[in-house]
Length: 181
Length: 202
Image: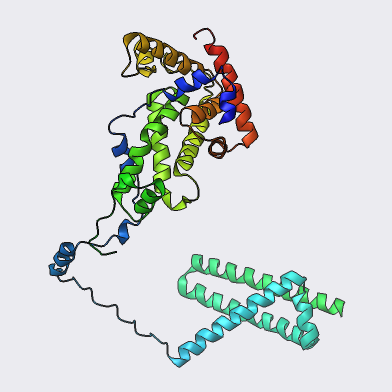
């Protein structure tokens, strides 16, 4: 405090400043503030006895009950069906895995088959393909006889193309495996 | 104490006592705090920003912030210091955003018409004085208001807290969040500027 009044020149100004009026905000200032204030601990204020009595005497309307959900029955398949599904899924999985591995490691499948099962297997596969093409040609000629020329030509054409492609692929594979051996 | 014992009136309680009642959920205690400090807080902010509407908004924001955070108030500090600290922070932030450094007692800096300038001007009147004394007092009061308005916001806050709100240097340092030495320097410079500005009036 003493340093305030060491400055004698400022003393009258300091005295005048103390006399400066205080300003009032607008009359609804307090209401505006209180509207936005959360009264702390308001939830802990004990509830009046009358209010509690009124609450107890109130009868709640019956609830509309919804039936409880029932468990769904387990729809189990028969044993043969389950076996068939398991076999299908397993074979599909093995095939996909083998294909994925072959693609990934760039394996020649025909070479692999000939190495594993011997060169005779490849010969057997080639003869099987020839037999299949012969039976397909027979089926095609039968189809022509049954369905007419136009349909027959289309069927024969598609069968022939398939057979030629399969045979060529198997022969090329067999020759490649022989060369490699 | 028996359950039926009447608690003392809120107006007789100290600030920490009223705050304690407010913390218990007494709405009347909130209103008491508001009644005690709405004029000092509003006056401080109004003298800083010189715009009634802005001052009301800032004062409202101050009280809402304070009253909604009473749980954070530590009774070892003065409640008024905590309140003024929040008011000062909000006002300084506002002035920094608006870059209003010097203001005129004749009206708000953003008053565009003569009417709005009159509406935002500060009228200094004193009651209970003779007409001549009143005139002199009004002249000096108006000159002081004008000179305060020309101070830097930091000086303005310090000099008003010291000489209008009668706060100690330590409290001012706490309110404006500045070292004690800086506060003393600001007040010294503010006094010098006021003396120079009011030299010809006195």
